[in-house]
Amino acid sequence: MSRVIAICNAKGGVGKTTTAVNLASYLAILGRRVLVVDFDPQANASTGMGHTKREQGESIYEGVLQSKSALDLIKQSSVTNCHLIPGHPNLAGITIELLDKPDREYFLQKFIKPLENFYDYILIDLPPSLSLLTINGLIAAKEIIIPVQCEYYGLEGLSQLLETVDMINQNLGHNLKIAGALLTMFDNREHLSREVSKELRRHFIGHVFEIEIPRTVSLAEAPSFAKPICLYAPDSAGAKAYERLAKELIAQESAIINISDQKS
Image (cartoon, rainbow, N blue to C red; front, side, top):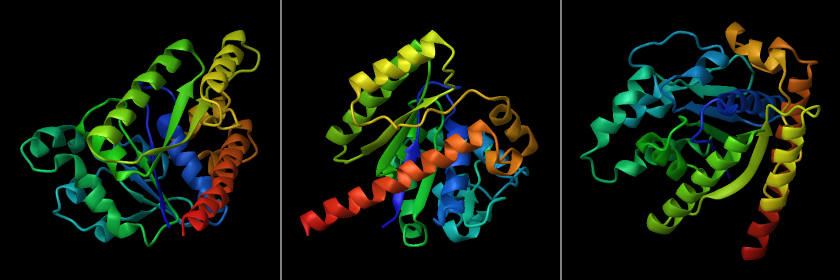
């Protein structure tokens, strides 16, 4: 069963796209079949995975509007077993194009559904806003990872997103689960980083990943070389952190299987 996971935070600059690119890469290295869907008009995840061309007619934009099939849009990334459906700036206008469509919140879900048999993980990189794009992504997903920057404004962004998730689950009959909140840009030397980590773990017991993603130069530099951290600086602290995150996520699989066994 494919795990479809949205990586989302309404606040920008929290490491959302960095997490999508590098988590996907390490899941693939660890033997999982992975697809990244770049649903952010900035299309930074596409660049970070080695897809530097913005080709008209070759992005998720055409897929959601049903002018191209999903299989026609899949690209190989720079990491074996890790595929990409690129984003495009045209996504910024899709809200207007879908505005009068019935079931406008479900277009991405319909697009992704046929792909679930081909991948172990489908990661959706969402824009830093609570727009129709984000709503489509959250409905298409079964789980959510929430990157939280180690500052107090980061905690406020988390609260807003959790309210949105509750609204979607209640009003649209969805059952989106939290795979985990992820602390990013962590610096153990800073009192604020330690305090935010403590507060987050105290308020969201059992829903915060153990690993904290450090603030490092190599993680900041890697996108400018169109490479994930596993190719740019594989021995760096950032690379080791994302590898541990991938292993944590994989470790959740046994718990999901056990729950399924109990229900059957």
